[in-house]
Length: 255
Image (cartoon, rainbow, N blue to C red; front, side):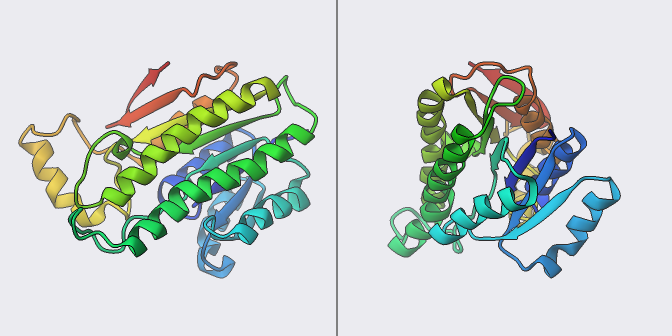
């Protein structure tokens, strides 16, 4: 039986690169995005051209009903869930000094990035536990967090807090699910060239040029996709909440 991967935030950028790579690795793909299917038809067509089976689910992971919808529609399309990639995330709508951050902004960012991750993982893990294992394990969960989990940015503190929370969720679920035959890992992208980082491109270009930033180049969505692909492979038969840093294309495994 062919395995199935749910990838959130999969219609563009890092999420699309992950969905494409896992599809090329042989997975059915459940593409989750907030926009209507018609809006993201180009991404679906790109996967179809590669012969990748894909189901589309319009959902907001910050919403309880939508999280359950993702699992339900994945099962309706392909019958099981073998991989969950928690990639979807949001940045603050307005970057503000820590002393000016609003509760509304904090609730919005943490509600999607951390709470959404927590409870979508819970729903998927329950499904993985209930199904028969393939290749000796019931599933793999990969959380895409950020270097901001450990690097302070005082003008987007809510984002840093949300990603630090994802790192702890990785450890918690790794501990809880290891005995169930489910592996849980984390990927921490550094500065990756996406539409989310386009507004600060000039800033980081200058820092890199001046040798003030510890990477040789911008990372790419494919760099992150390669890390996720490795974690979903049979190269990792155990879990301790492992994470991989992705900085400028260099993958550093931390155990």
